[in-house]
Image 1 (tube, rainbow, N blue to C red):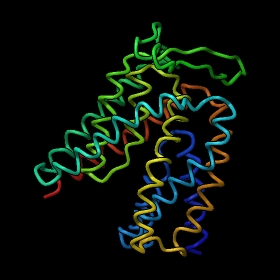
Image 2 (cartoon, rainbow, N blue to C red; image 1 turned 180 degrees about the horizontal axis):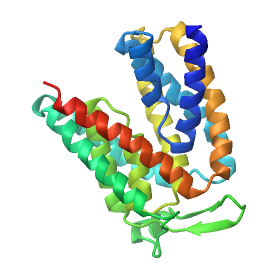
Image 3 (cartoon, helix red, strand yellow; image 1 turned 90 degrees about the vertical axis):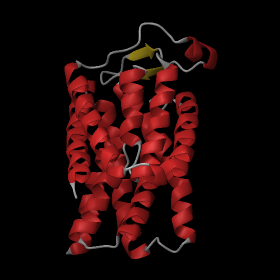
Image 4 (cartoon, rainbow, N blue to C red; image 1 turned 45 degrees about the horizontal axis):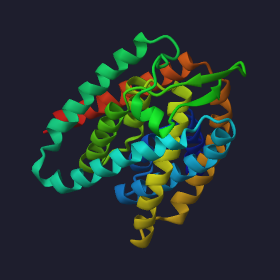
Length: 272
């Protein structure tokens, strides 16, 4: 019975992870630790496997439909990696509770900004860095129409990625949420492109982390296997559903997720 529940939850996590570009860890870890009472270390290891599975399950579909922008992914990973290194260096000097509160309220503000939008707010002018690196691209909307898009505020996007890396290292959270926020709000990429590109980026990052957990013997096959299989199935359906979804629908789903995460962050910051 428990295995069926875990499998079902993993399918849902894979579906949402593929649609929103966040990986399935946000759903899988709380279920494993709270419902199944799994040790947090094994839960995180299974979560990393699930993120790799989400990325793998959706990547082929997104790449085939030209939603993933590989050039943007490579550029933004520079900021994420630099931020993660900084976070590891300063983690002992920072009070996590304060950061939880700041991060939580920042996400609440981001929710209000996202809900004010109507569909995609595409960039009118290509940033000079975008022109030099050829970051712009083309994607198909839900009707099959081909749309060209430009990339704005590349330095701002890199700065947000740096902050995402720092927060990931200090708070132990995934940076998929901030990746999508940076690309959607700062760089003005289409929400579908932001989600697909974030999905690719978190898969690359999680692969390295999952390898480290594997070498430490923290990946339990009896936990990771049903999670990974469920995630792959869910992400396959999520990738196909996302292509047909309207940008406004994806934006509302993402804003709802941001709201839940923000209240979690604020709650953890208020704990004694």
